[in-house]
Image (cartoon, rainbow, N blue to C red; front, side):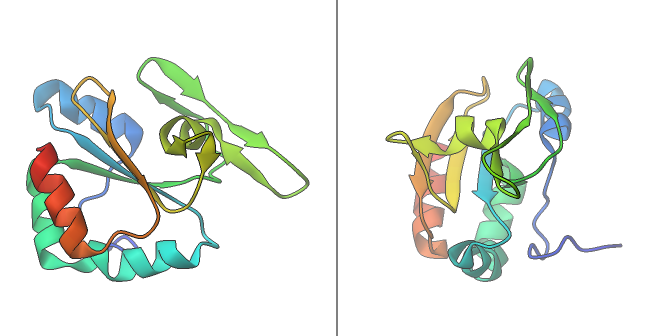
Length: 142
């Protein structure tokens, strides 16, 4: 079995998979919004998301999506189609990343966004979150 890069035993899903899974078993959705060049994103992937307590909590009580904000793939989620929007020659941001990661009119990486079972934003936080802090956040949100 192939292990997703950066996430050991953490079950990661696509937005499409989460919509299907949510129909049968509604759970909050944790969306981790990152880029390939973000140093703090890599640190968070290697530490926070490899913590056994975090893996257990996310796998049991949430759906987890790891979302590259610079993905060029069209995504349909919550009855809306989102696309990549170029901002320069080799730069841009996905509309879904903008929708989920904007706090105070700004997108910062990494951003953790938690959606409730109706896909409304319950929680958002920019920046690195250590395992202890994330565990406290998840405990409050489930």
